[in-house]
View 1 (cartoon, helix red, strand yellow):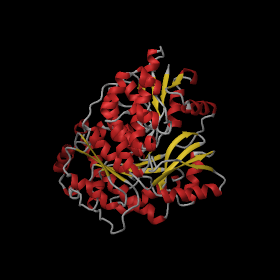
View 2: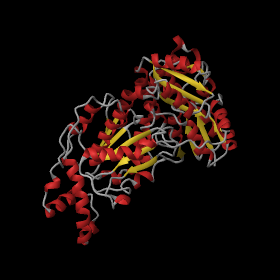
View 3: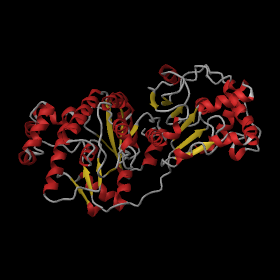
View 4: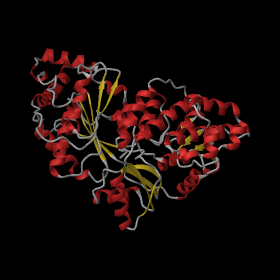
Length: 514
C-alpha cells in the first residue's frame, strides 16, 4: 500500500514553489484569485517576512503542497492509498483524497490561518530526548500542568504549548533537569487550549461547507486513526486546539505499509526523517489514558460498551452497589454515599491521565465526584464530560420521578426511551429492575447543589436536540468551571448517545489533548 506525506507549518522557505508555479499556471492563478495577492511574488521575495506570518504561511504551504502533489502524479507517482499530513498538511491530504476541491481547501486554510493568527501571548517549546510519560511527570512535579502537549512527533521529539510566561518557566525547569529544549519561532500557542476561540469560530465557519466521500484513507492528527467522513468537519475544527499525534499516526500507518512505500511531497524530507526514526524505535507500551464512566439511572457496566468499542481509551465504568456485577450489594439512594463509593473505586487508579464521563444521573454524580477528588487533593481529571443533563445548579426535571406510582413510573421511563421493549414482556424482571431504578431516581431527587468554588477542570456538555432542557440549561454547566465550556447537540432524545458512540469517542479522545 502506498502512502503520501504532506508537511506543515515550519517547512516554508523563501523561494519555495518557483518551478511549480511556472509548470502549473492555471492552478497558481486560481490560488491568487482566492488569496487576493500575488503568491509567487510572496514566496520569491518574502517581503517584510510575511511568509512567516501564519496568515500567509498556511495558504502558501497548502498551495505549494498541492502543486507538488499534482506534479508528482503527472510524473507517474501513485496517488496514495494512505494520506497523512502534519497539522496544516492534513488539508492537503484531504484534498488529495477528494474531500474538497483545490479552491475550497485554500479557502478553509485561509480562514484557519486568519483565526489562529489572532491568538497572541502564547509560545511553544520543543522538548528533545524525553518520553511523553517522563515529560508529563516533570510537568506535574513542577506545577506546569497548564501547558499542553501540542506535538507528539516522535518518541523523543515533543512540543509544549501555552502562555509565554509558563513556557519560559518550563524552559528554565527542563533545562535544570538537563532536558534539551528549544523555543519555536511562533507568536501563539498553537494546538493548545489557547486555540479554543479559533477552534469554535472555525467550527461555525465549516457549517457552510459540504464534503465529498474520501477516495483514500486519511489518518487524522487528532485521533491517529482514519477520518470518519461524518465527523470530518468536527475533526478539522478540533484539530486546531488538539495535539498533533504524529507518532501515533505514523505507527498506525506502518501497520499497513512500509517506509519504502511512503513519499513526502516537496523537497524538505522532514517528515520522512521522522518516519524513519519512528520505524527504527520499538513501540513502547505506554499506558492508555483512562475514561472513568458513571452510568445513568438503572445502568451498569454495560452502559458504555458502545463507547469502549470505538475508542483507544481505557474505558472503566464505575459501577454502583446493587447494579450489574455488584447486584448482591445493598442499593444506595443517597448521592453523598454513592460518590464516596465511586471515589473508593478510582482512588488508586489515578496513575495516568484520566477524564470523567457521566450521562443523566451519571452527569451529576460525576460532577460531585470531581469535587470530592479536589477535596482529597488527588490528581484532578483532564476533563469532565457530561450528557443528558442540565447544569447541576438547575433542579433536575426528574427529581420527583421516584414518587410516581408503578404504572406512571414505567410509562414515564418509556417516554424517556431508555428501556428495552422486551422488558415489558416479563413482569418479574420489571419488578426486579423497578427497585434499582427507584433507588437511582431517589438519589437524583436527593441531589443538593454544593455551594463551593467552581472547578478548574474543562467541561464538555452534550445533549440531544429533542431533550426537554434548553440551550441555556445546558450552558449552565459553565457556572461549574473556570474553564470555557464546550457544548454539542446531536439529533435525538435523551438516549441520543446510543446513536452517537463514534462522535462521543472522538470528543472523549480530544479531551486528552492537554
